[in-house]
Length: 138
Image 1 (spheres, rainbow, N blue to C red):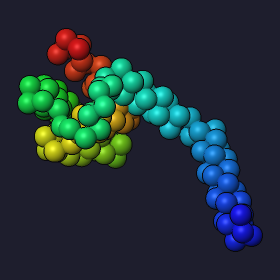
Image 2 (tube, rainbow, N blue to C red):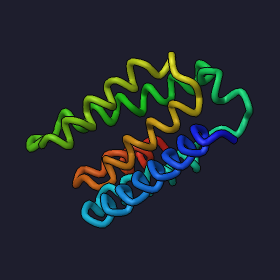
Image 3 (spheres, rainbow, N blue to C red):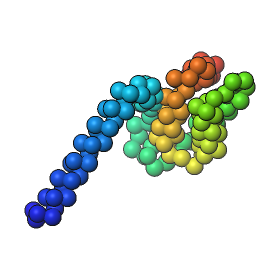
């Protein structure tokens, strides 16, 4: 290995260590971010599709309709809130975007984005996802 490659490799390792330290500090000072991540991963792991094609293929039409209906329910609930703050508005925007794109995304991308949305929602007082999954029998 040449010195340039070793140097580049060492810099890459240093960069990864800095990112890990940042993530640790971020979670220390912003515990809600760690909770969001936990709930997002929990949701994704529960609903991810293990089929090898899940990272390349969209959901079948019936599942697209189910996700669209669920997202529509979430969107209606969020819109009905009288005291929406910036965080809730962000959840609303992401929900609307996912609803619009559900037919274009791969199966696991939908799962990851739903998980991210659920993670953010879980920290909010609205608890929209839990209501929606209970309501829709999930």
